[in-house]
Image 1 (cartoon, rainbow, N blue to C red):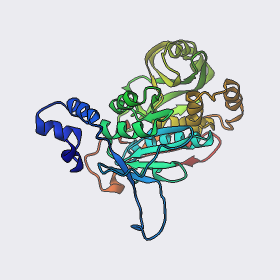
Image 2 (cartoon, rainbow, N blue to C red):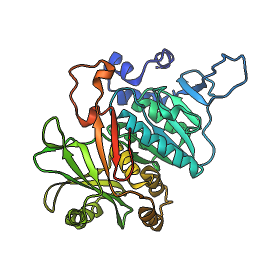
Image 3 (cartoon, rainbow, N blue to C red):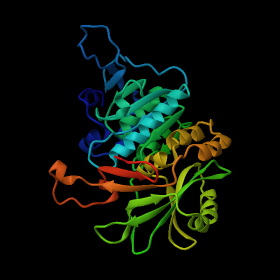
Image 4 (cartoon, one colour):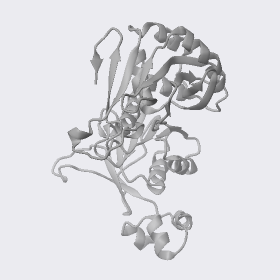
Length: 349
């Protein structure tokens, strides 16, 4: 086992070689205390005394990374490694990091992508350059023992790995690809924040017809609907969100009058869009809710003072030709950019 680890073989690779389960390998590793140590990346190769606080794992004896002092949060994110909503996801994680630092948390990032915003020193106090595997993430959590951990949606197994070594961690699914709804009738989206007792309305959005297919779909939407449309869905939406087991930002979809079809966490692209529309940093509000710094009165005040325009239109952008891409299908998961038009302001990309 010790020799295999020194060669850099993962639990999965050892399990495959020994014809046993990865969990059995992990148990053997724990039994023999064969844990990773971390070495600091030195850009000048030792010529200068510099400490960028960027670390990689090895199975040597000397460890150069101690647990970060004070309150700390771990953010797991793989960054925008492909065209599409990865950039919106990275934006949300970056805003989480910025808000945590505002509240005096030490931010520890686990990333495998140098293009991620989390790599910057203004957002992360320490970065672990490691693959997105349960084994690697659990090792970082074991060393750092964070007070909070944030993982992107679709990476639930990483959250469970963190919880096994640091049970007090709150795992949050921070990002998610929007659901593609195509219909001959418009879909309404009620956006709200649930603090465990009260549902705060964050605006109602209506989908617009996509010129390419002639139907309503998620790729174009209009914020701040007329009051009569809003009234139809507000009461039902608030009841649906108040039944959720956890606090957070939620969206309720409607495809029939007064009947909700689905309740789901607010997605990263919608968080970015509604942040622009409302003039409020929804990511920051969500973080304050998670760490016990949320103020409902402040949110109500901001909702009345933060908006200086009457509406906005969002349209997804797919400049595939600019990237010499062919046979690409326009869908929420492949959005490259967006255009937002405000009622009393110009458009912005």
